[in-house]
Length: 198
Length: 243
Image (cartoon, rainbow over all chains, first blue to last red; front, side, top):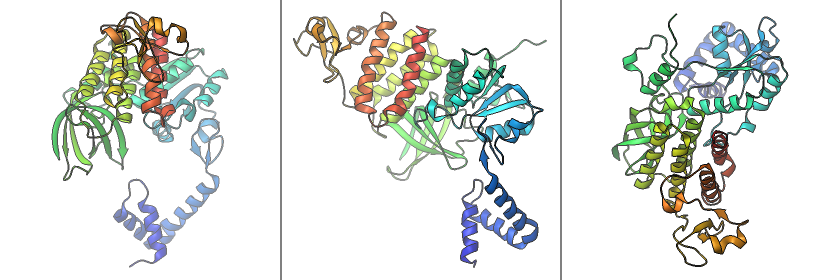
């Protein structure tokens, strides 16, 4: 039997993705048992993030500073720009540190049924960045869904008048994938993107 | 309800963390929605893509309940997403179907027509072939939902010959001679929508799109016009560049 305050904490945690009521209860119990080691640092971290949280006015990333850490990182190649749908995509690509350039978050994808139009996305700011003349290559890293691909086609059309190289992430065989288990759409993409063996 | 059928994937919406609600166009039951457990998993994601043909099984205790849905891929059309025109056409035809059709009403002709349009997009080497099929699909959709155009005879003279215009108010055909005086206010009626067959040129196809677009926006997509029609505008714009 928990107090109203603890119940409120449990309910708040249960609303987070990946957590249900049971796992939220377990997390709360852990926080209460290890108050100094987990609850207090978590509280401080939440307060700090809440106080400093900002959306980057350049790329649309979410960070504790504006411009964000990615945009202010001088080691990054400012001439390469990777366009992603969501902040989670930026974080996924940046986690691997494979892309040395900068990013641009659209904030969604074009969708007829969800009523998302070009003006609802960060496309004008992207055009502005490219028009600034500091970008040589734009990598369209959209999801391999119908909405993602139609967004990529739309962007490539909008960007074609600028003197930049427009590229797109490859689609096809996943690492460790077996041909026998792949759907024909993925196989078709893989065949289309085949390349000569050196 | 238990229904096992071949179906066309029209719309997918994430539900919860791992599941998805898919709306499929079926031959006998029209548009049917179902919850796919694990619909956002790596295994199911490539199956639940708009335009794909799947073998679907819907199970629900009552007719009103959202059915549980399992799907197996029959034909994937995701390979076409790399083509701007084909991707736009699949997006528009599937979004239109999902946006305007009521669920669980049988539209066997619409299923056949949508299947034909998607097959034409997949098979046709040029957009001109499937573009006229898409105009016809939109016209059929209007008819099936009670907003059909009367393209059989002239609304003024009763003549069945030389029909060249359509009234934007009544949706009735008007012959060339009767409509000449009002041509600025009438919509052009392309010959392939009256006599059948292929469209003669791109002008005919764009006249067809203007005609169906007017009535779709006015009668079926009035409230959500800007949202859904934006996909159509992008498609027509792309076709204009390809023509």
